[in-house]
Image (cartoon, rainbow, N blue to C red; front, side, top):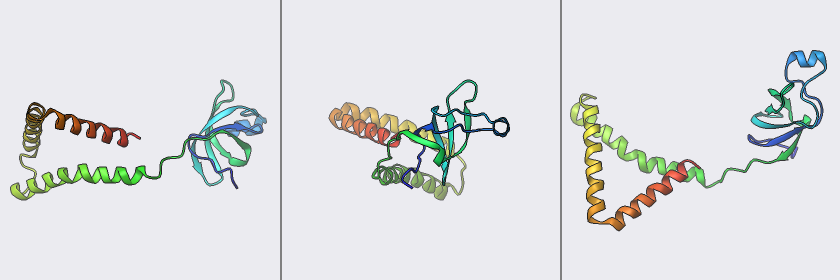
Length: 153
């Protein structure tokens, strides 16, 4: 079946589709030709939100009753490993900080103060880097901008 629906696909009802039990009893529902957006999929069914004032709404619909109008873009295959590497790259120093604090203080006593001190020292280090070596600071800020864009992709 080459009609596998994905979240974000825009679809068109190919026949009248009852979304509620009362629609089924009354023989009404979303009319043929109405557009909707797939918000979830489950095998051969899709949860679709249809536009419309009177008979619009959200419901589970068999994929055979839908025609695809436009496809949602596929996620990039390389983005998941890159995001995982960024999480490790940015998360390991934070985890190291917590482990060192637990080891040296035998608990979380003073943890908030330690985090505040580290944040203050980080801001001072940024100021020092910006004044001592501006090109390097700009390069690092550009790297952080790329990381931010990749994490929101």
